[in-house]
Amino acid sequence: MEKSKKANSKRVIVTGVLWVITYTLSLLAIKKLSPGATTGVLISFLPVITFAVFIYSMIKEAAAMDEVQVRIHLEATVIAFSLGLLMLMTLGLLDLVVSLNKEDWGYRHLVTWFTMFYFTGLYISKRKYNAQ
Image: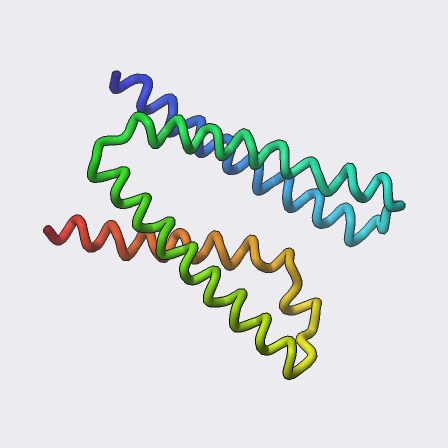
């Protein structure tokens, strides 16, 4: 059982790194090469595949966790989701009043923010459960 938990954890890390690399390379390819519409769409969907594999690995990892670990990750997800909605609401309202620079506040920046929100939630949740 312990061996499969380590294998699941390793798979999550590997698929997560693969997703980040694929996303970064796709972003750079689209920005630097300015491909045509068809090629650009195909490049845009490459990270979708690796992210789907990452999500699948995360779900398998969650199935192997104990109740406290599941609770920690669930709470981190709730915090990240709430902060993400708060940010989207704020940006949506601000965009009605002032013109937001797409280079600073475009959709592609949301990936970074949501990832930071999740790790912030994970930090908060782990501190809470380690204190008990």
